[in-house]
Amino acid sequence: EDINIRYTEDIVCISLDETTELDDVAQLVRLFAKAVGKEASFTEKTSQMWDLELNRDTAYLEHPVFNTYHTEHEMLRYLKTLENKDLSLAHSMIALGSCTMKLNATSEMIPVTWESFGNIHPFAPKHQLEGYTQMLHELERDLSEITGFHRVSLQPNAGAQGEYTGLMTIRHYFMDTNQSHRDIVIIPESAHGTNPASAVMAGMKVIVVKCHPNGYIDLNDLRAKAEANKENLAAVMVTYPSTTGVYEETIKEITSIIHQFGGQVYMDGANMNAQVGYTNPANIGADVCHLNLHKTFCIPHGGGGPGMGPIGVAEHLSPYLPGHAVVDGVSTDKAMKAVSAAPYGSASILLISYAYIKMMGTAGLKKATATAILNANYMKHRLSEGYEVLYTGQNGTVAHEMIVDPRPLKITSGIQVEDIAKRLIDYGFHSPTVSFPIPGTLMIEPTESESKAEIDRFCDALLSIRQEIAEIENGVADRENNVLKNAPHTAESVISGEWDKPYSREKAVYPAANLVASKFWPSVGRVDNTYGDRNLICSCLPIAAYAEM
Image (cartoon, rainbow, N blue to C red):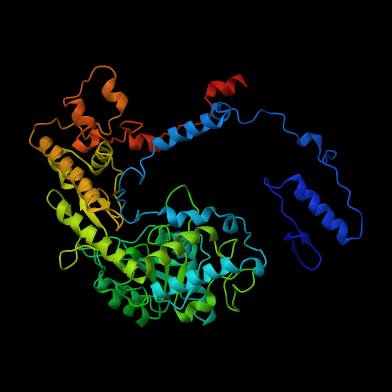
């Protein structure tokens, strides 16, 4: 009958949802009737089988948005108005540092829409998953080769869940080797915020190690804390290249110190886009790492998910990777319990990373890494004309991203990082990462996907903003009432009513000549960030509407 039903020794389980039709139900009825040797009896309309008291007697979906758009044209136009409020990669580069906003190629995305992949249940019989299984296993092998690790698990559903899974793999390894007392994780103060959170969730205690002013981990502090806690040391969590945008030149010494005192090395894979093809986690001495497929391997960001955070592990940790209670072939005798409901996480979006790796090939992946680093250093060279780049390696270069420090400008002009971020919107750019990992700074990452022309356009915008700041410093522009403090400028603000600003409308909304031909208009002007964070506004019906009810 081509129907998959879950069953155990004495229980049969079926699942019906909003896509189930009456014909599907009729087919199930006939199937069960045949199984017990009876004639199927099926009527489309059955008597009500629940208590009338359970019937809803209140109105629902009363917000106007649910009762306004009744044709496809209207709905399409409404969705388009929402889309037009969003500045995306379709408009310009998004240089969010530590986010790796690279191209999500259409050719990589299309397979996700194929019914042959999208409509398969994760618990379906193996003979129905042969193509899917081949893709998954090839991706596991490719990621193993890229990371240098013995085995990869595709089960974790997000980067942070990958961190948790990697740490739990280490915990299970220690429990199996009679070292369950090892529960201390050393984390540098420059780490991603998810690192200590994941460690605590995994039942571990966090000790923070200092960093030098140049961004490097303080080896002496690391060694002292590792030795002081050698009896209970479980791991170090280290990002490479570091979150400060430089290659940690003592990375092998760091991993050696941790191993010397019995710990494991967890490498945060957030910055793998600066490693692929040139080095790998295993080469620097790591035992486990997670991969953010939405960064290095092209799965789109945003929308709240789904995410994927596979982990790779060295051979001695392989037996402890997460298993699965339902699907055979995933678990080993020593496997930990599943960290995701499905054995391969959000498997359908793995097609995107699979396609990216296959189309790029070894040479292409290596070139992507080189280009990402080249773009970042070109940008660093240009932006150094107007801003201080906070951290560089000993040779004066950065990895794939950099931290630009505008904090001194607050003293000379009153301009802060959020003023620069909001003014960038007038130039048609999404802001880089603000105040991470250093408060008051901008973290910028161009990726390999952007052309020199687009990178120049972004650099021109930031340097033009620096000139606008210079006007404030020189007394040409007012310290409080200027294009930065009032940014961003909406279309409505420049065409309606009297213009009371001490600068022209043109300067407000067309600060660069190229914007005349193609301009992204922000939907809202300047907002008070602090007030907004402290005063939430309900987006539901107004209070008056509830009073009428």
